[in-house]
Image 1: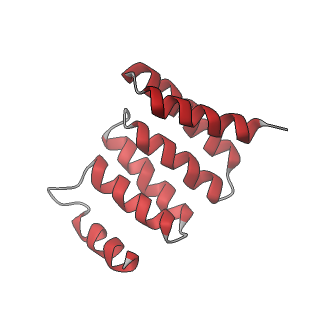
Image 2: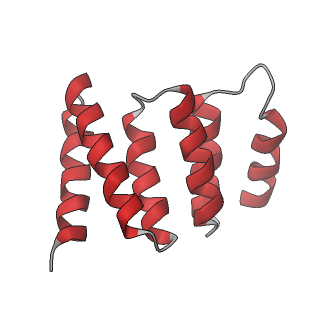
Length: 106
């Protein structure tokens, strides 16, 4: 099912429905399939459409960590925390703060 979903989402990229939500959905599906590198790329594209998309920052951090790039994960979560705080998205701010603390714990 995920491969079919990914193919369907990819077909929409570059079309009139292309945007942050489409790229977030594609990134999420790719991460669920275990392709963390491609997921991170799509989540970065989502953030290019909407840099204030807190959920994309959160998932980007997870994708980067799954891809083995802890520094990029920390950076995504720091930027996501700042974005969430500016938007008043307390839940996302809290969650990313927890992820970041766990990552930075010795």
